[in-house]
Length: 68
Image (cartoon, rainbow, N blue to C red):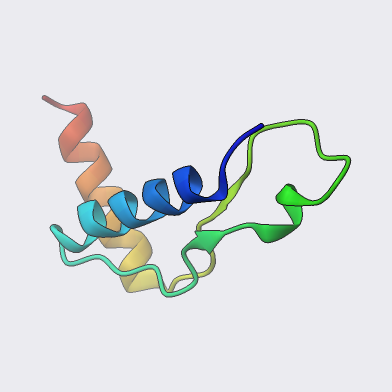
């Protein structure tokens, strides 16, 4: 069984990593329905919605990291 705290920790680490690049995903959270009874997989993390500026910033950071 996967613990909710592990997933919350992952969300916070992702939030911190994004903030280091001045990127905020306001809806970043644990997808609580994946903790419901019959769901067999690992909990999901909802990245949520973002505006175009945030999407472009995230794309730039990921592209830069891929070039390393």
